[in-house]
Length: 267
Image 1 (tube, rainbow, N blue to C red):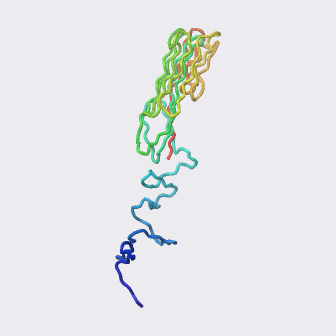
Image 2 (cartoon, helix red, strand yellow; image 1 turned 60 degrees about the vertical axis):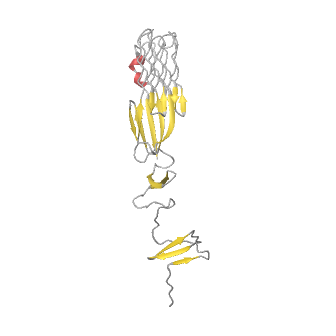
Image 3 (cartoon, one colour; image 1 turned 180 degrees about the vertical axis):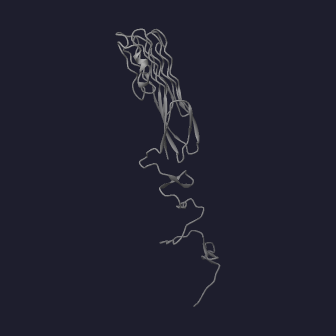
């Protein structure tokens, strides 16, 4: 048997070739193969090498544009992995595995008065945010504007916001623009989707039949021709961000409904 021991094999230009050392073979240049059979592991620092699969059952490959890693699955079909709901000011903290969020931000509704004069709804905004490099974002939720007796000015709803990504203005209270006129819905100022809050009704007869402005989430509290302070007594039956409905005659109108911020979290 003949054996040839060499440290290197080079091409005719003396540039490329292969080196042999300690049982390892190193290609000095581009190595082209037609069929490659690997009976072991593949390692190195190349961005084309898949990270170790050990302990990664049920996960998916993710790239940030420069490297790849394993990440938890989100249930398939683009479904969110979790959801956060805020009815008051707080801080959103990124859950494990979350890389992108869908934010819905609704402001508070204005308060109603009497004789059909009702409050307007808060504005609504939405946007997507890439949070791969963000850990927390401040959350503000607008409160409800208070109702008032006939001829009074209902309280304005408060502003809701999500960091610098979404901002929704509160709805006006009854009579805030001019006596007996309908109130204007809140103004949306930040977000990819911007929706004005529903405006409200002004003075009308028969008394007590003025619904507050509708918000993105739905309608206002009920009105009544006979029941006393019906809108105020059932103000929590209104959708988030809706305006306060009016009371009958000169009674106190209903409060608006507070705003809400909803965050859908995706991987």
